[in-house]
Image 1 (cartoon, rainbow, N blue to C red):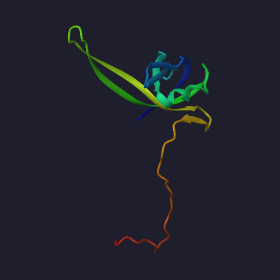
Image 2: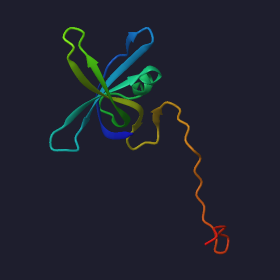
Image 3: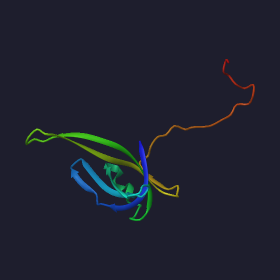
Image 4: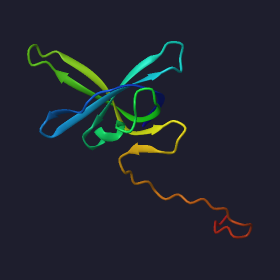
Length: 122
């Protein structure tokens, strides 16, 4: 899992690639280094609507997975490799509002034991 913060530059329309597959692309600009980096992300299936709440110029944090695949040319058998950045959650920077698919996360509760209440044998 990776994440990056940047400014939304472009968001494309949803594309119906096949009967069972749809995608949507968007680009953010990362200004954290000397030269701005324009980074393209992909949303797929039910996540295509995650970018809907944002407009170009918004500062967002994108959570994504790095995907790689191999493709063999049917013409000459040459192998090529492609990478994609598949976004699964988007948050507005400086706000608690986010746009993501429901994710089950374990309920984490913190506690502190008083002296003498430790069940550990050592």
